[in-house]
Image (cartoon, rainbow, N blue to C red; front, side, top):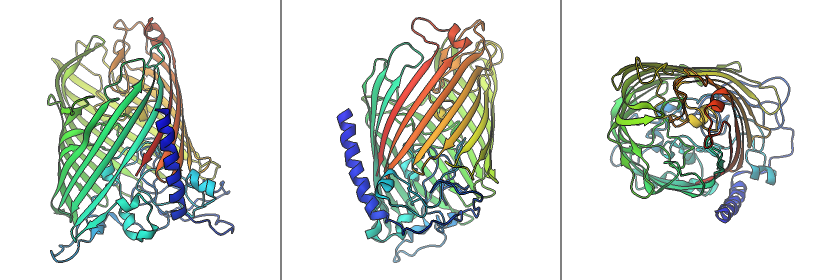
Length: 585
């Protein structure tokens, strides 16, 4: 495995040198401008930051990204004028004899900001390690459909490569030539993929040293017929080497189908297309606190089902009925027909960079599941929620609240969650810092097996992103006071520092991990509620336009609850080290 990673690193570094030569030319040695107009119209002022590290708040996909790079959208040229969302869909009928205008038929999705989003660098600077090595300074972040980070949350089918249409073929990077290939007058084809390798040293709250490697290959084909029909398929091979503890269900899934769906255009509403999607698909909604493809996992989360959607300039609607797909190491994955997820998700963007979500979710799990003496399923409930995130004058905010009502076995179910986050972007400071303070709450049950059941169900979240990289806590029976600091020493280096203080909402309920599994419990409640403190350090190096290297250190210091429930096989602390290399094309 190390030799494989080294060989891949040498190969992609060579490709990076080639693409740097093709895409970036050294700028004249004149003094850079003191400020660069933001696409959103805001111009940072005050003292000068180091070259290329001055940040500014901008909007999402249609402009340079403003979200943190794990979940954030790809970088664009900043001051250039992008294609507006209303240009995405077919507005006028195209005759059969005419060639399709492909600028009018892409259902490119504008993704909401994630939680604890950072304000990304802008202006002149070096935007990859290869740029720095070759002294190729850029006037603005380069256009790309991929984030400058090792983890990409949206599926490849949502990567927006429309900017490639504006480039001459000789100016395209090698992987851009694989995108938006015209076939005759009415067909458009794209292909690409990913190779990922990750070293893991992770003890999972046990005294056992567990060192293993994860590797993953993905490749896809995407075919459009005008704006009427789309067929998308994506292959994945996920494997694991080494390890003392048994693999997680998402560690191994050899030679399988991640996505295979068809989009059909039903018509238009207010000049924006309405599509229905059927088949196997990844789903990302809102902040991903409840519905996410789980991009950290080796086998990304997917569903079988039907989804209808309409995406506009300011208003999006999604309707869906889905069943989760269960990973199988050596057989084709199958659907769990005992679980159904359905609902409606509406997003309103009153202004650029502001996102208001309103959603209704129905979940039914008829399986019988018992963990730590708690009957976790069967369960059936409705979730009503809302979220508002945005920024103004360097102040940032992120508020999300949800209520669950239903039945849990023979018990009535009433539960809830709340997230309150406020932040500030220090636009005039070196390293472009962004600060966040959050309080996360998810209810628990005073007696999980009797009376009213009040434990919140986190559904299908990106838990790893929000509640610490140690994965010890999930959004169930938990309270978390957390701080985040995002820094960019140079534009191609991301530093993310986190602190979490965890305590249980109810002492007789369990501690649930990032996957929603009950891992520790004291039925008497005598162990108390103080779980402990966690510190995380994440550093990402954007090596080339297509490759990243990320290292993570995470330490959980267990307090009263974990200490009281520890045994010879269960420890009170947890340490994790990750090193990840990712190459996309």
